[in-house]
Amino acid sequence: MRQEIAFAVRNGKTDDQILGELENRYGASILVVPRFRGFNMLLWLVPLAAVFIAFAIFIWRRWSVAAEARRCASSK
Image 1: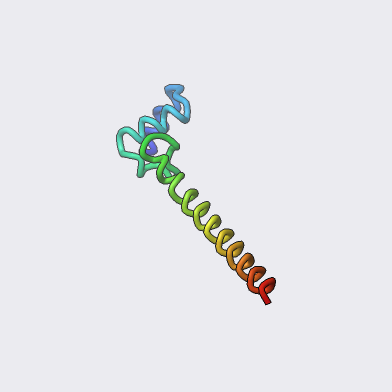
Image 2 (image 1 turned 90 degrees about the vertical axis):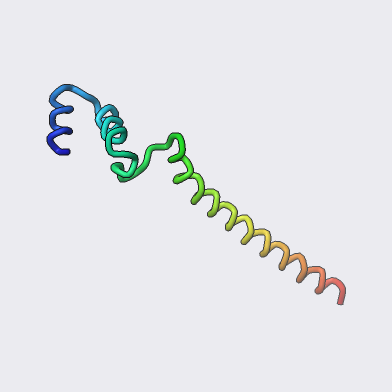
C-alpha cells in the first residue's frame, strides 16, 4: 500500500484523489476518519443527535422538577 501511495504521489495525484482510490479499492474502513458523504454521514450525525437529545431531556427534566417545586411551594 505504501508503494501504491508513493507511486500516486510521484504521478502528481492529490491527497483527495489518492484517498478516493484507496477508499474505492479497500472500502471506507481503510480511512481513520470516514468522509462526510452518503451512508457515512450517519457515523457523524447519529452520535451528535444522541448527545443533543440527551441534553434536551436533561434540561426538560430539570425545568419540570423546578416548576413542580415552585407549584408546591406556592400552594402551601
